[in-house]
Structures are given as C-alpha cells and as structure tokens.
Length: 389
Image (cartoon, rainbow, N blue to C red; front, side, top):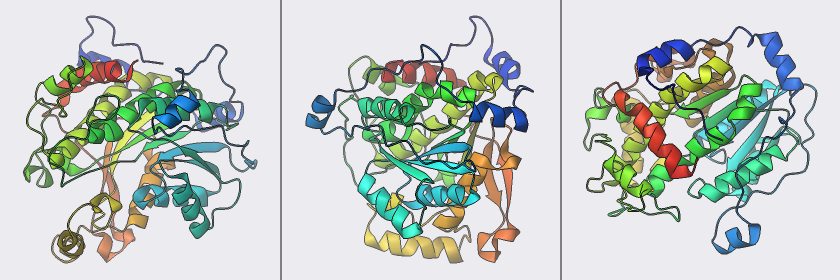
C-alpha cells in the first residue's frame, strides 16, 4: 500500500503547507472512539507474504499470527516498537507498558531474547506481544504486517522505528537477498516498507510514527562534522540498486561502514519529512527523536573493546552528554505517546545535562538537515521502488 505522490505540478513547499495540519477530527475523544471501534477496512489487503516453507529455507524470519492478546479495557492503545529486545527499544517498551493504557508489540529479530527481556522486566501477561521480523528481508516485513493484522489488536496508535545496525569493521557492504546494503535496508528500507503497509491502521487510529535519529546525520552539527560525513550525493547508488546493479552505497561512492550508517540516518530524517507532508492531513503524527548519547548502547557492540570502555567515560565526564538507555527509552516513549508531542514534522532533542538530573533537561524541537532536504521526494520515490510499492 503506497501513498499517493504529491499532485503533479505542486511545489514541495506548497505540499507541506497544504498537508501539515492535523485535522480537527483527531481530538482526544475522537481518537479514543476511533481506536476502540477499530476494524480492518473492507478490501484492505497486505502484500503477499513469503510462503513459510520457502522463507524458512531462505533463512527469513516469518511472523505467524499470535494468539489473540488479552488486552484489558484499560489498554485501548497499541504500539509497535522495532528492536524492542535490547537497548533503547526495550526501555521504550517498558515505559509504554508502565503507562497502563498501551499494549506493546515487540517487533524483533530474536523472539527468545524478547521473551527473556519481558520476563526480566516483569511485563504482565496481556501487556505485550512478540512478533518476529527481520528488517533485512522485505518478505519478512510483509509477513510481520500480515501477522499483526491477524493478531486481534485494537488498532495501531504508534509505530516506533527504532531498530538499527552498524558494522564499523566491515570493509565491504553486506548485501541482503533483496540486493541492498544491510545497514540501509535494516535502518531505512525495512522501516519504510513497514510504515507504508501499516498506514491504513495508523490513519484509522490517528497514530504516530517515530523515527530514531542522531545528530551525526547532519554535517552542520558538531557531531556531524566528524568524518566520514553523511552525504547522499545524487542518490546514484540507490538508483542503481533499484535498477538491479547494487553498489552497496546510497551515493554510489566507495563503501565506508560508518558513512553507511550516517547516510541511513539521513534517510530516516528525510523520510520523516516526506511522510509528514503526505500523512498529516489524515491525522498521522510523524516525528524524529534523538534521545541522547547512549554511549553504552548495543549499537556499539562491534566496536573494539577500548572504545566501548572509553566512550561512555568520555561522554560522562568530558562532553557531559551521556544518557542512560532507560532514560533514552523513556524519552522515545514520550514522543510516541506523550501529550506534548502531538505536532508532527518535528525533530526532537533534550537540552540540558541528564547527569545533573532528569528534571534539569527538557525536550525541544531542532532543525533537521536542510543540506539534504531537497532530496526527500526523490528518496521517497526510489525507496518506494526499492521495496516494491
């Protein structure tokens, strides 16, 4: 299910102004009514999932419908969090479940790991479900969406695009079975497909989409100036991959693993902008969030030992930008469900030093990169082709 493109001849700026206002029908009472009355629209169909036997043979994670969740009347909301079995994702799940009104779907590559997290955190039965998804496989994403629709959930009020990979030691791209660099596919293309396939559910619930961001995506920030800097170029590499000639990079240049990660984060922010322009008129709130420097995140698991020891200390005592995984997860949960984050198109960061106390920090909207902003529509077009929309 793809979005309609912007009307022919309508400038991008005009499209933004025409669609950036949340409709008045998305009041709190209207949202509650629409969520409780959620039923799949007639004729609404997912893209065909991979056949289980064929997908298993190919090593693809295939989600099967879970038993109908025992969602209490006090849980009118449903949130999907990708990568909810570790780091920010698992703490975001913890924070949303603690609200008492949200059933969390843990969308994970390793269901057994997610089950261990749920047991460790003491998640009560009926407050969460676990559905497998491998974002490096487009068939697995489609299978996940089909399973979600068959799962008996009460609608979809937030989709948190959190999962990410980074392989800092790689000398060459890891090409997926779909022909794209794994970093780009997991961090961007897999989420792009998931969001588009679930847009009907998000519209019916006046839901939210949250992308995880990092200031390293923007060369105009201090963090972004550290080489290698992010740059999508003219998107020649992605265009070639769509045409069947994978280059392993978005810009078509030489592969560098850290640049590949930063470029994927540029794609996340540009997708947030383009999606906001397309979906705000239907009541969907689309945001990006940088929840802080989580220096001991599992994202750094492939960095050398000395870095994993040194970097948290550097962030705590030199830059003083360190944030715990739990605090970062809480911030993500706030953007996904908090009353103060109901305006879309924003890129959120927290100002102040967390080390001086959480009460010394406050969320603020900051500009996303405009250096690459003009490429948002072309990136959307190529991404849609890449995932088969």
